[in-house]
Length: 578
Image (tube, rainbow, N blue to C red; front, side, top):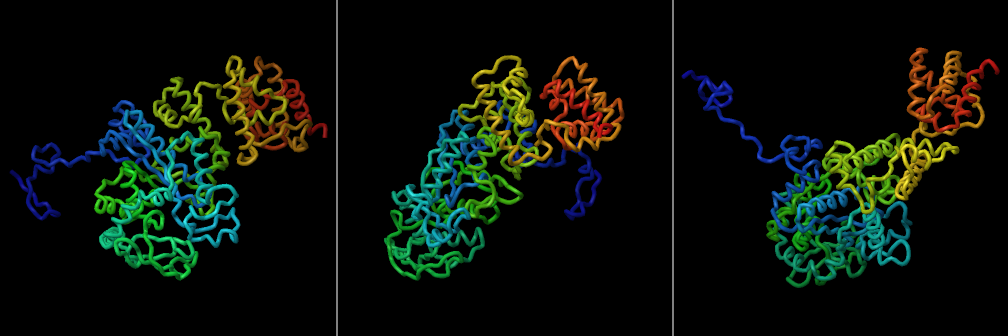
């Protein structure tokens, strides 16, 4: 046998180990599980071979069942109601709702709960509220801050109810709960006692996981009996029944403590656990088995690492199946509820109808970041993909991935089998007063519209008008001029000749349909050797008074034939007659 010196291992090995087929060669171990971090994971052949697995939700459901193997699951999500929820908060609730839907489809008993962390302090006054009115409540639990409008139970209750209304429109139906109820009702008492009794161990866990050297010896915040603030207190002692605390003026930078010192029982709503420990305690108290969070919580040494260690070592409870998901951005920035940046959740449903908003959330892989920009062609393209998904769901298009996405995205009452005129077509038809929309859609459908068809059309008309008013590029906005626009006087001789010949073509056209006219325009453009800007620019100048607009063939088809012929001839002679 021939031997060779393996330099990095500093030892002699058989020379045949250079060869791939050597029977003595050790094979590299292949990973036993499939990584879920790639947006294209469902394209993996092993995944495609599994029956019913097409999208990332299915993969997560399989991983959950493989990891936990339980007959019942509790899926949890939570949010701090410090103001109106932003559209980024919707990603979590839709993700968990989709997971719940997938688990239930597999016959797994699943409860989806949604928590409102209303014992968190008010840490900033949202810009849409009067700062002078709410600044005195900075540091006070959200459940104890008065509501902005009279009549609501509290600040937290008001914003929680608004968010419930929003996510219910998206087809999400978790059972809501409030942190204040958990604390005041005594459900957190045993967790608080255990945490205080083992405070030194928790402090060591925190140091081990995050490297923290915080001065707090007890991971608890007490509500000050003098000023009512919870963010400014420091627990300095625990005797088994009561805690000693101080309300520190300089503990946080955004509000001041009153300096009070006192003793009180930490139970029945008098205190709350600090965030990382509270997260673990809620998993234990509520029996949570699945919970995702934004990826920032899953950084090494971050809040999830600490909560995971605490729940396993202090509460002897397994960490729920984790789902680190990416942010939704607006203008490239992460959305924050109390900071008042970005698109609010209820405003988001004014931009996108609920079915489309949920489809966007489900279509997007949970590990993929999205910078949502309603401007440009974002909404028309999303509408097109949504319509294709509905057709795939009905079996009219061969795309199992889109069909499965539609199943997860479908909201209550959504019907896939209605007439679906293209959004971009509706957007330009609503700008032409002479067009009878229902008649145009019925002609496209090939039959009369049903009540559901008319309802869908009305929804699209409203969406199109809103998009045109707020977000559409200038090229999509137009107004057919009743008289020949002045800019048409600047047409070149070749453009005038093009319009004159187009008038002849239009007059002889066997069909006054958009696709037919558009094809004739392209043929004439090619015959005359014009570039698109010359040919289409001439049409737009003649009818709209600007050099851009919707697809020319469909624009002309939407207008009265005699009006089109008259205008083309006018524009063709505009220079000579000026």
